[in-house]
Amino acid sequence: MTIHKPGRRLMHNVPLRFVQKKVSGHGHREINASLSLTSMIDFLVVVVVFLLITFSASGETTIPKGVRLPDAENTLDMIDAPIVAIAGSDILVDGARAGNTRAIEESKRLQRIDELFNVLKGKRELWKQLYPGKEFPGVVILQIDQDVPAIVVKSVFQTAAFAGYPNVSFMVGMIPKTNKAGGE
Amino acid sequence: MGGVDVGSGGGGGKRPTNSEINMVPFIDLLMVTISFLLITAVWTHMARINADAQVPGPPREVEPDQVEPEKQLHVEMRSPDKFTLIWKQAGTVISTVDVPRKDNVIMKEGRKTVRYPELAAKIEQEWKTVGSHRDPSDKKFDQAVLHTDNETPYVYLIGVIDAIYQPHRPYNAGGKTEMVPAFNVTFAVN
Image (cartoon, rainbow over all chains, first blue to last red; front, side, top):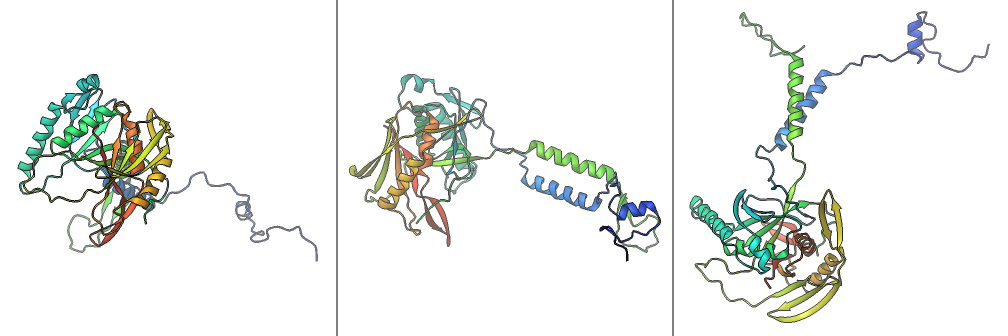
């Protein structure tokens, strides 16, 4: 019995050369690959449905130009509440101008901002008319630039509190938690 | 082409029961929808940090009962070198601890983030020792008061408030226990 070189033997004796090439592993790959249309459409539909569910038509809360919010780790989810923004020296309530911070920056004294107070008070009264019998949540969200001095923050904070919004929240960017929150 | 087979019918009507969908515009539509949704998606998520104002609000119809003053943690950040944590009860100082101040400033795309991990760890330790409201059934929270000078930039205040919110405690709400921040934070007006 002769000794043969080791290698593939299966289908080796097929007389057709292109079949031999294919089965012996020397054949070229097809240039055109077929795509399963059903799987592709399933995938596309799932992606569309996912994106539609997560899509917010109203968009996220808009941040006025020039306001750079700081980031924080121990945060809460956003809620629907009036937004007081400090853009430059202007104070905006839900995008509408409601006073400025120049007087505070010049005097460097904690003081109530009357224009802001009146706008917030008006919003509070409107809410009470719209939802009679319901307890007013008293939440306001502050959008403040990272470099605004503390005296301005405290003045706006106090003005909001005096206008009937004791629950003041600061809008921040979210950063992932570094460690698991501990408790007892 | 793809098709929708709704059965063989058999009514003898003129219209064919099976209708065909042209796959090319169908896939085009899906692709355009995906592109639109991806472009309009907002990838940055905003959050909030809560603070309670302890200033007289509008007059209440029913005045609350007089309650015994509770312990409060006063966090002093006026010094550039250290934080001072002071536990007070009705104006009486219970304990004082100094924490070296190290401003860990992280700059990212023009945005600044300030972290105080040492302060957060010390506040957590203090709360575990001195804090009054640690039981999950306790509906009240310990109060922290932040003292700062008038010039401190807002980003540093957020850094300290974030550190105060680091200690968490279990809280029973509607038969479910969840972890919530141990402190409520407010600003000192002076």
